[in-house]
Length: 238
Ligand SMILES: [Zn+2]
Image 1: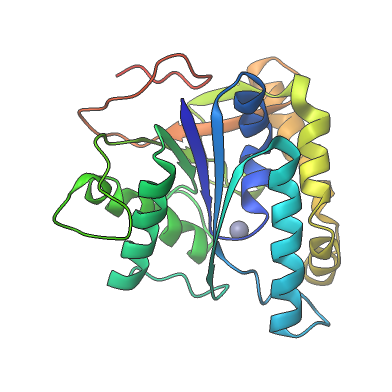
Image 2 (image 1 turned 60 degrees about the vertical axis):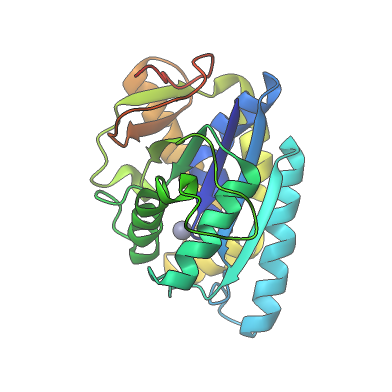
């Protein structure tokens, strides 16, 4: 199976899906990470160009830990908008990776504007990626991928439908998140805690909810019909 996470910011894949992606990869599935923006406002001290370069390096390093195929789209942080050009770009990445399953922020439940719009764009393009009369650099897909929305920051407003037990890959997820060193400074500046603080609180709590030590949480985007491999970790039954 081919599974990818489409992230608005350079650290979202690792924060919300790092364990799940690591687990799929360890089971021999193909994993991808696409990052919509270059994270170029995420620093209290560096210039936009400087922090964007740092964050690309951090995101590539995090993906490399699990050998994920990496896509860097390079849009401006905090300005994710649904435009014809953005749609074509997203569609082309989907066509290049050919996912069976896409993980992304929840278009209805997330509260960060870049996240809700990213989720909406993934929703809006999931059929278009299979439409040949919408041309991009890569040929149209011959299947329509499944979409799973991942948790929100702090779990605010998100009622999980499915949990993935990530206890056995917890150390890998922590290493992936720790690649985003620049965000320790940024979150300390904004909220007074480092990026790794989120891990201890949120994913232990999600684990508590489903009876394991650490878990990541998901909610399925409803659609029909669906054509997808059924041997994944998420219950991809129609
Ligand atoms: Zn984000």
